[in-house]
Image (cartoon, rainbow, N blue to C red):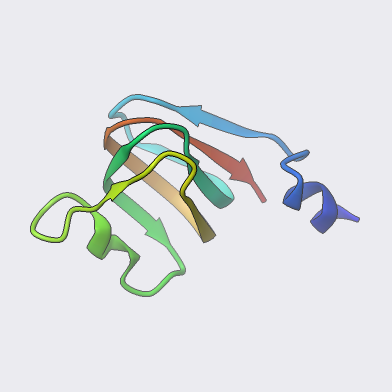
Length: 84
């Protein structure tokens, strides 16, 4: 039952729209506007390559990233981080 709630976002989450370090236990992040990630910690191999620097990537609004995410810092934009 818990997985259905998680998939629907019923376990809650956190709206992040600043450049502070945020930690938690999230299974997905969704950009609510064009967003650039400064740093991210997850179980997705090489995901940090999308962060600020030579490989910086702008996530378009409504882009989702799935995984076991434990930390995120934004350069710009906003996301919703959904709880596990």
